[in-house]
Image (cartoon, rainbow, N blue to C red; front, side, top):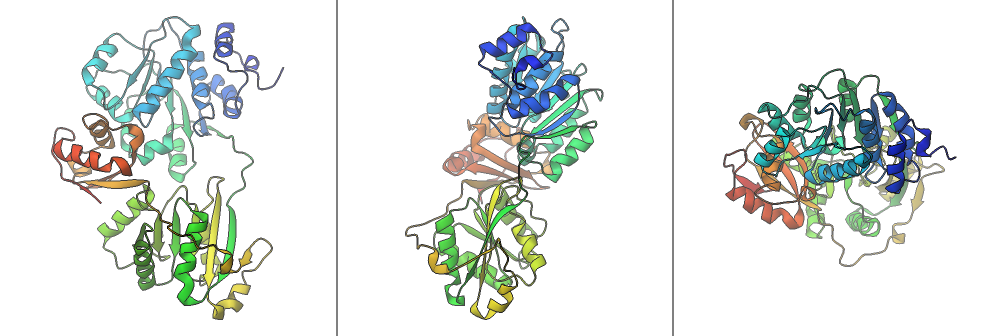
Amino acid sequence: MSKRDFSNLPLSKEMLHNLGEMGYKEMTAIQEQSLPYILEGRDVIAQAKTGSGKTAAFGIGLLYKLQVKKFRVQSLVLCPTRELADQVARELRMLARFAHNVKILTLCGGAAFGPQLGSLRHGAHIIVGTPGRILKHLKKATLSLEDVDMLVLDEADRMLDMGFSEEINEVLEFVPKARQTLLFSATYTDEIMDISASIQNSAINIKTTSTEVANKIIERFYEVEGSQKINVLINILGNYKPDNVIVFANTKVEVQEIADTLQKNRIDALAIHGDLEQYERNDVLVQFANKSCRVLVATDVAARGLDIKELSMVVNYDLPHSEEIYTHRIGRTARAGEEGEAFTLYAPYEAPKADEYKNESRLFEGAATLKSVNGFEMKPQNITLVIEGGKKDKVRAGDILGALTGEAGLSGDSIGKIDIYERQSYVAIEACKVDEAHDKLKSGKIKGKKFSVWIL
């Protein structure tokens, strides 16, 4: 018998038979490492991507402890989008086929409130939903979570990206403190770890990517004449085609010139430096973080505090003033076990200083090895909508998501990161859907109010 066999777990014959019927031959890595702790009733924080089998991991756990005869909401699963909530609920229903009369209900924004109200009156064992809609039902007292003994935050990092941290905290006020809490996230950011510390009790930390090597960065250096630097930069982008990149330069003037030249060459780029007003800085950082801009050109000072989870590439347009600065710059790529690329350009007169960077792993290559890529362009995945309403107007991420997936009819998968500030909100929309989203929001309402909306 394989150690990954589900029969190694204290599951009922009926549940094991159903898992076999579903084609679950053996546990995936996340299931093998997390299920023993989940079934013991321990809190777990797990790094797991879509397709890793995480739904079955927490699904088996919550069904294992579910008391079917106790017709109360015993488990709550929070998801970032309606699509994911529907997918999770479908899988939970299949996992629950071994038991009779297990009622699983989805509560998401973008769907009519009335029918949900009717379903809630008939009761449920497990609720799967988005934070905004769950909170709306809690505040209207149409949902009670007083009997919940298991809480699951699925794709927690995506929920934070979509601006749900405030809603999550409010939902938690309605859930008993004595509960089991499972947190699943594709990335382990400081914010995720802070949430774990505040809502979990001695959580077991599980990473199925235990063989990851921190910051696996391929470092390349090119000696380039000053007049050729911009062409070499464009060739780097054309040859390696990064999803996103930060280009570091040493002066504000140079930063702006690089960004302007890249834009003229059909490469989507924004500049950030000390001469920008705070609102301009916010606009730039929001667009880069939410994938509405692929190239950010920055000075070291301007890039401080910039938290980008997945950065494909860093380019030092100038040789950094010190190796400490160099290390700090390139350390922004290859996080969470991903691979990253780092390129450094230096002028011939800087060659003696560049020699100080030489070691066994760094590659010093000729810029001529880069092919010229004709017709190359870099366009953003998303475009940002700005809504003239924010925290002061009591606008929440759930309200925006509901307006876009409800009346506007957008899929949750077309909606990216949501950032809510005091007076404004930013929402990333899939580029091909942005005009449709803009028109619908402009002519519609958010939380019953009209707000000015424009494309950034």
